[in-house]
Image 1: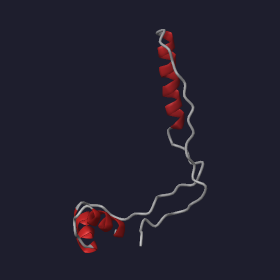
Image 2: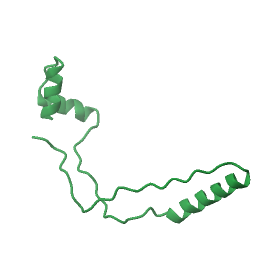
Image 3: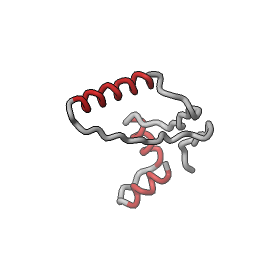
Image 4: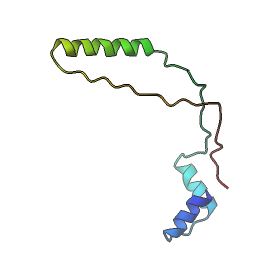
Length: 88
């Protein structure tokens, strides 16, 4: 909150922390911690997703269209660490 007040002051807007807090609350902003899930959890429909991809690839290949395959890695959390979401 303090950083936001300081940044507004740098722009020439003099407001207090209470005003900023009230405006953020009125805009439905709230402080929340990050939700953490253990590593290795999978999407419940993973098999259905791969089935859909395989069917789509087969249809494209049958029609003579090229198919590009990409392999990407999901970022995994190492542990159930949280950040409080507040600055002093």
